Length: 144
Image (cartoon, rainbow, N blue to C red):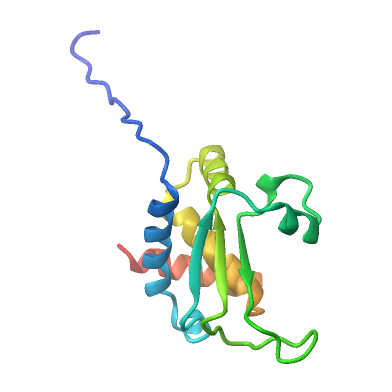
């Protein structure tokens, strides 16, 4: 029918590593207070996939299984890690697995990235799943 208007979707290129890094840094700058205190000085990197050493160490069945990895700085003693981040602490985001999940679920990429970051930080700093979910939702709502 000629009188009906159609919505035309615009498709763009997927975010690059640099794009995801900028988005992640923005998310880190606005972390909820309970995470912000633990992440002072945290470095962020974006890689395409986990390397073979990480795949082997974590016994991954597929390189798409890992979205992010928190690498702690030096241990205080074997098996005992600091509970606050320092300049040696690193959050690695894996671009291709994140983009794959984005394509699968159709979520807003910013919301998805925020969720990935919060879940990885929450897991590392021993927050419960409920606490991480509440922080994610509260942070997302605060951005509007």
